[in-house]
Length: 465
Image (cartoon, rainbow, N blue to C red; front, side):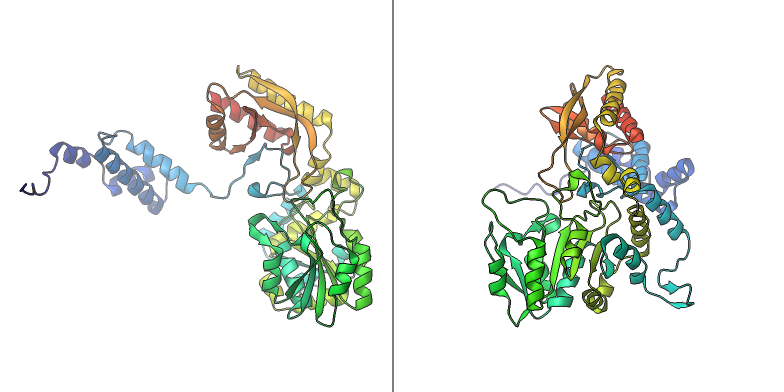
């Protein structure tokens, strides 16, 4: 029988290498002295750098303390960097959910800064000198822009639909077309929203065809409301049929039942050809919907928010429901949303000042000049680049069939390879996010302004250098 050899004798050479490492306090003190770092942050960076080096020495991939200060400095920089950062969106996806959706107009950014710097009249009535309501701040402006009797804003469109369903149909039937039982980004599913509202879901029609008579047969004494849900990021095409909102509201009015219209992306701008396939907010209100819900941060072009407009009676029920407080919007979003909405008073101003609308309607000459400027800068560094035609997307669950044709700057990723070039661009400051097509890296000028186009081109040059 073989004998147990017992514990392995320590490796004196390994012990010597480990002893060459500085102590945590020693390395942290050097970070404080050289970079002016806070002591606690310096200690964290030093501890992580030493722990990583100990592992590397034990595995044989390092021999001592060489370069540990640089490693600690890198960890300190990473720990000091904000997690939420600006990125350059060169993907051509205008309302890019992963990249924060709609960039704000300058007016909204100014309003954010003004309100954030001090106190505000969020819930104070300056004229009366007493308590006010944040819900009243935007109501008049929203009614003016949509033709609604009343309005309310909560923290996003999902919250708006949930609140409307709870306020109008809790404990009762909520009728919806089977073809509108959709799931959009973040696993937001209409059936689950209805379940959490306390309403009972009643499906009518089929996946591809729902007629007015289907709704009519479902209405009865237990019906709380009808819900129309926009299909958002997909479309059913071919052998399909759905009920127009005017006919649905007429049927509902005859039965004394309110209609909740989930419009999704918030197409508030009028006479914009690119928005023709999105349901207009004003049409929903004019048709007679009790509550029309839409997003503030998609096609409307403002901050995250869920806008609810409709009849005074229905909005009042939503406003007084207990969920309204849990879902209420904050002061910064209110400030940015108000400034964005004010731009809509003049359609020409809105088209010019709201980035989402400006990107949607950008002309070929503007885009081609920006793409050409990126190509020239990149080509000057002896990197192959050319201007080609490609298609951009709206994104954000809006207009899934719309393809925005236009020029892009295409970069040959050789010799790095596409994945490595994209990785280096993500590591630039600010990170540049692009897209790929047939082995080329595409920089789309539609989602870049002139400054950002320069940053994107410089990042490519730096990454390839």
